[in-house]
Image (tube, rainbow, N blue to C red; front, side, top):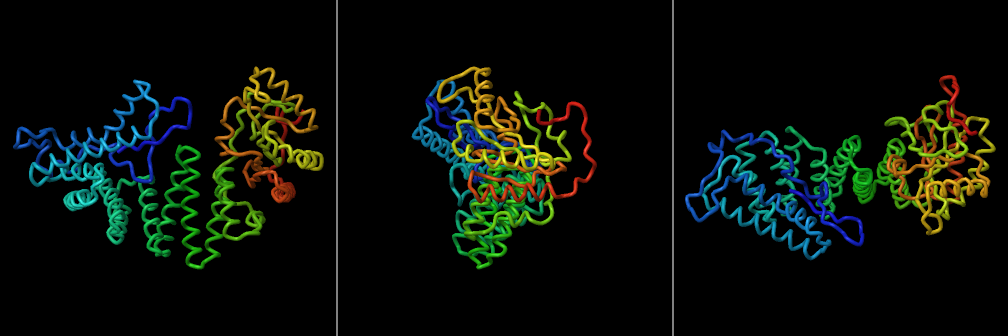
Length: 469
């Protein structure tokens, strides 16, 4: 199944298919039928010549691909996005799936893979009773393999929809005992289960499923999943888990789960996730000290800080972050049009002057935007403006300027100002969001803390290493 998601607004929105939704994307990559021998046939021929005689798989694939083909047609015809048309197209898919399911059912008792495709047709038609009946029978006759796992995923969805919580949990457990498994599908199923138990006010079961959500989300975070989607999955998992603990009156575990996410966000690194998790921390305990969790030893790192993409450097020798090992690096994400960014300049100047001889390097990270004060400009004009801006505001540290959003993506920066503090080993250790005094005070403390840590391996400088000119 494919799922629709709208494109960011524009004057000519187009129809597009999203990667996946909360409801699972069944049948995107079907394996060769693993129970074909058990069914005793590869194609079912209708005894009634007036009925569609195509194989069950062909009927399913036509219904499953219906929206894809329609959206491709709309885009070829340059049809503007229309929510009414989108809803009508989805209903057409449901109606087609229902007709094909009726065709299969009219052939007599289906067997083997025909049961599987019948169940998924009922799934597309939004017929939970039909989907459960067919897919339960299929899993009994074919308990292992990819199709059985997909069938279990669908059973979980429809069992939860019918409030059959025990069956959903049993099927989820069976899914976890079989192969292959999809972290994406597991996340979707656990999300639906956690939400169902929340509605039932069974917070113990909600917490158990939220913990599984988080486990799957962390596994997915190691893949090439899109940054914003990754952060949303990790945050939603922890939101569910912390809320379950809070409902159970267990404030300590609730706070621990959020602080664990904050540390994980720093390790990724993700400024967006860190900002959301910190807001959740203060929601649970207003007045909490966001810095406290970072006061001890360094947390485990997922890897070194991502290298910077820079098309131009201003008052900074071009190079890589790895050239700065042995020093503490502060990456300040900013833009000249950002009002709050300017409130951070005095602190940045002070830290540069106070700690530059102790090993602190500050880099202002920004992008070419192609305009100044609402007017389009050339690259040369914008670069000249940034050089002048730097002198006008007495900023003594260097700039790294990118011609893309690569740095914003790699560090998950969706709002500015935002700063990342990197220790002498090249590991992100702290993230500061916004221009508030509390954030500045916390960042100042962490700078001092990291500078006071042992250098470790002796610092070596080579000709051409990064350094302020």
